[in-house]
Image 1 (cartoon, rainbow over the protein chains, first blue to last red):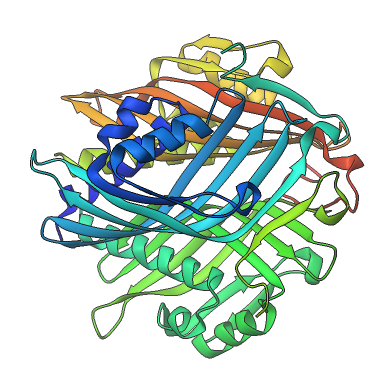
Image 2: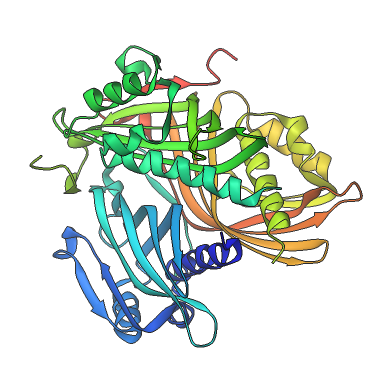
Length: 158
Length: 158
Length: 158
């Protein structure tokens, strides 16, 4: 069992998700292979979205996740299978999205990711494909709940 | 420190929880020793439930987690202690259960798992005992919240 | 890659968070260096709180997290960088706090931890600094939501 490669791939996934939530788009780009594919999205926005290529993926994220959209993505329970310089990974995933300009509409859900990874020419593991199947997802208007207050927002004023 | 054994036991737990959420009962059975014991349940359904034996556990899960019950279980923060071919594991646990036929009643909670594992005759680690103590658990009727919509349900139509 | 040290540091963080949620203050103290610093808190209570020294940190936690305050802290997605006998760690963090005596006011949020660790004189890794920046945090009065029931509380009657 190549434990070091497993640790590198886990850290790759964590860096990708952290940089998405922190809206650090150049760092997100560096976690993807040039030919990466991604299948994102929610029925709320008209269903799954397929993007092909590092630039198209990052453009989609940058355009969608503007400062009025707070996201918190969490991937857990990695089941990673190595095959030389490629690997597959299954992850349990939960996410919270809050649209501050829409009465604090909140979307919460869970899914299972099915990813593919590749060790790139520079020796670095990158994401070649990422996509998930939802277990559930719901939306609710937080702003209309009793006692609601948004007490922290990293993107307020941006 | 036998890192490979730790990784195998973590993956065992992840596979168990993933297959419960995906209602893959035969795969769940394969994560348990024949003599496994489980202590499940919630005060909502009349308190903890003790099941003894792989078949009894899987029967209980199959009977309880019908397609109108969406579950998302997540175990994190593994503290695993190896002792030869047995091991103990403590996990932080969060779960969301949505009963779609009861106005989308949602149960959410957190707990700490105290598990026991054994390396079985075929060399595979399996769960010998699983059980948790709740930190908290609450229920709420999602269907009556402002702006509620269930926007994804893997089991719809099943 | 010193996988054993990474595993020890992860387990240190998990033990710290578990013992906070279980209100085991002596065990929390043992996860901190004597000169540890912590930056905690929420705007709800008047903004971030800085504490210096193991005793001051534990006193703050013991005084704040009384039995009427249920907490469930979860740190995931470790990105740990070792540098000899010190290390830094970034974690994705989610927490739920329920104040049972205030109509079950619930605070939920996400953050990124930026920690520092040190291998102490006794060879044990401990937390030298812990602190986080919130991505978001909100509060809501659970007790006024339709169908609300608290179905488990580990601290009821304490």
